[in-house]
Length: 451
Image: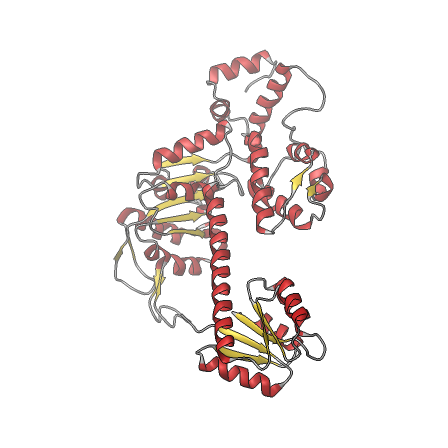
């Protein structure tokens, strides 16, 4: 563990140097600043564990510096010192946030004890903050799967069925629908949970960079390869590798991935040595891979290797019943992260339900984060959201504004499902949880011609 770093602020250079020497003899790393302004600049450049400041200084005095530090860096304790001691000054400084107060000239033992206690408080505060952040992040991961709509219940069932196996899984769904969340849920509920989960966006990297990231390389494999690099397949050994946007990989990369799935071995770039890896591969795409195969854009053999089990993640439009739960989750998450307490006006949910959400759950989270960031009243209103959310949408809302019969709502919803699925009767029947014959009969009753 590195030595604690203490910043000494005093415009009396001889007093500053003397205190720094005392602290260094106590095995602390100590630095000096000759003014409050200089101290603030230093605080922007590096992390300090404790500040010891004189009160009476030219320009900003030590009390104002202490208040500024407490506002911007609340986890750094501040000890104030002055040769002009008074009980009122001591009480006021501690009341306003100073850890403690020392009079000049100070007793070495008093200084030693006060500094040690202040540093202990600093350590505890930082550990407490880190623990709270870790707990908040853990909560976010644990509740990452939000919703109890029928389409999401089917996703949960599939996760439960495949999690304990090592079967390769293909996750299909629109961008922003939560494919990585599903992949993480599979990993979390598997026997590989104690080992790494590595996510790679295949569409975000060039072919050569993706190859180096996944497989690693040996020294001298290419220009700039100054050292050996372990690839993510090796780093994730005994864990899970999530390949997002698998459809964006090049033919050469598809060949290499096929070899990994078939042989469970990899070769670093520039090496002939084979390295065995024990990994589970989960791939995801927002495209119809079967169509990509027909068009010659994706290897058929790799498709069959990936498509052992397929999980279809519904778009947000297909699970609008989950919108209130998702909104509440994101509102609490970002309010907590920003240290705010924010509620939402009931008109907000009506506005959100009327929007078509082309960016799916990711778009919803971004919208909520922006609204929470900019809100100053403590209550979200429709005016806190971007203009496009207020425009009429082509897709029907969950409920029409005019009063209509239950049969008409049923008709509109079935037509909406067919429109979203490009007329695919089998998928529509599956989503609606009815058989194809029932769907045909309902369409006939509604006077809808089927091809």
